Each structure stands twice: as structure tokens, then as C-alpha cells.
Image (cartoon, rainbow, N blue to C red):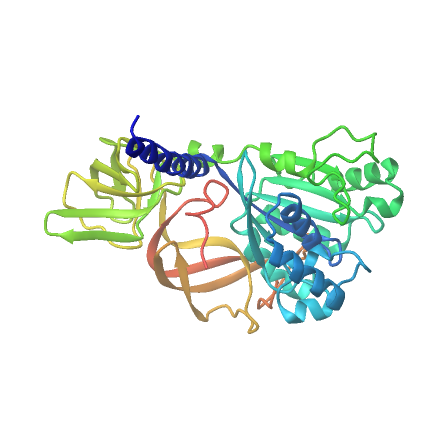
Length: 421
């Protein structure tokens, strides 16, 4: 081999390695989860521990963290891992989480986006925001205090927002001498409380986020525990099957018209799968056509599934606009201008029946009115109570009237096409 050939081979090898790495990352699935629970139960510390143990903190971040720990830390001379996600000055001064903080990390098996949500009751709406896109909830409980009012409230909201996988993280187990009896007591209390919440999986894990016990590595101090560490469970929990099993849905986000010879309909598939030749319906108008092309970022494809961003072309020229919902012709969604729904009210001003509001469902925007508050839900006792208006952080079941019909599915069937703002 000549010197030129040798240099070419040497320069090509790193490029191939980078390409292989990027492809490997693209092929990993992604889990979105949130940490929730009562104030001071260790949510931010747990995320900081995950980032620290998965080697995703740079040296300059670590140096800054050590400096901030001396100024704002709450763990004596140790590094306060909670400060990795509590970035607002007010959060550091008060030692609490206020806003939702999102962090990304990855392991060899999966990619993760984690939302650190606040525990204070006044920031319940922030917790609901983080839960609305999560696949799994890590519900922290202080082993000393057990289930608190806010623990129950967050579990209820997680269930209401369609989260089907829950980890009960019994944290600060070191402060109760790693007691198996205390862990089993809290686990039993929560299983009894959550029996009616329809969670598909519930994994209880004893841990110490501060010291890393059972977070990413198994603890030698709890020989009585034979279950997975938190990271092992996060890497192995199965998600996404529900969306794939549902009928095809594609909310149209953009009508792609680069020239006179091409008209495509772009969006992210919300449920099911689609193939070239499948018959689709424009849900609101009822017009049908067959799929001519499926275009993805990687090029043309014969098949696309839930979660993929695609552009679809149809065999016929029919009227489709941003906000329309393309669906499987044999399994159409509901189309109506009247509906009933649970509302979590997030505004300082109360919701008033009869007042006109703007509703955004997918990419479609319509005017809507709450015609009746059927009942409010006491999030502590889950009792149904009467109410004439809806205050900040309150939850109610309401009847709504819309200015125009919209296409939707029941929220239990599809969180994307069954939700609105």
C-alpha cells in the first residue's frame, strides 16, 4: 500500500467510527420520565445522581457545582447534586424546585429525557406540565415520612394524564437504617392507595439518592432487596406498544408545497402505522384517498410507525389543511363540537362557565366555552364536589361547546389526539 493509500485509510476510519456511533444513537429508543412527589423528598438530588453516575457532568460543571455547593448546598461539605437541576437563583436560595427542569442523558441501552418537577402545592400546574409528555413517573417518598398529601396528589395527576408506568422510589432509606420493614410498609400503603389508578407497572425501589444506593449501582447495605436498581428498571421498562396497537393517526402540522408538482402532508404519527396503498380519511370532511408516498428524513419508505416524522402524499387531490387529522379509513376518530373532558386549570384568573376561551388541539385552534362544570375533584380524597368556577391548580370534569367540529380520540386511547390546551 502506498503512503497515499495509508493516509486515506487512516482518515476514513475515524469517519466510519463517528458514523457508526451516530447510527447507534439513532436506533436507541427514548424514554421520557419525570420525578415527582412531596417537597424535600429528593427529586432534584436523584436526577443529579443519575447525571453524575452516568458520567454526563463535564469538569467545568463539576468545579462550578462544588463552588455552588459551598454557597447554596444543604448537605454539609458534600457536593449538593440537586443544584445540577435547580438552576434558578430563587430555587437555590430557597432550596426548592419551582420550574420544570428537563435534562438529557443516555446509556448503552436507551436515551432518556427527565423532567424534574416541583413538590410544592402552589406549583402543581408545573408538575402537570411535566407529566403530560412523560411515559413513566418516578414518585419519590421520604422513608421517614411515608406517603404525604402531595405524594397522593401527584400520583393521581400522573394517572389522570395517562402515565401507565410508575416507580415508587422510597428515598433516604439510609435515614431509617436501611429498614426492610419500613420499606415494605410504605410499599403496601401505596399499593393499596393506587389500586384504582390502572397503572400497567408499579416497581418499588428502596434507595438513597444522596449516596447512590440502588440508583445506578446495587447497594451492599440492603441485602434483603433483590429487585432492579432504578437505572436497570428505566432501561428495561417496555413502552410504545400501546401507541403502535392503536389505529393510524397523523395530525397535519404543515402542508408541504415546494412546487406545483408536489403536495405533501407533514407531521408526527400519533398512533399506529401506515403503508403505501393504505386508505386514509380526512377526519373532519370524510374525504378519502390512498397513500401514494411516505417520505422520511432518511428518504422514501414503504412503512412508517408511531413517533416517526413523515410527509405523506395521496393519490387524489383533496382539501387538507394544517390542523386536519388523517386517520385509517376503517377506524375513524370522533368528530364533534360538543365534548366532556377533565380540565386542570393553570391560570391565576378562575375559569368561568360561559366565558369564551381559545382551545388548541394538535395544530388546530378553535373557540371553546365551558357550558357546565359537572364536578370538581378533591385531589386529597378524590371526592366529587360541586363548583361554579375553577381556581388555579383545581381539577374538574366539564362539558365544552366548540365553535367548529374537531376530530379527537378518547384520551385513554390516544394521549396526543385526545388532549388539548
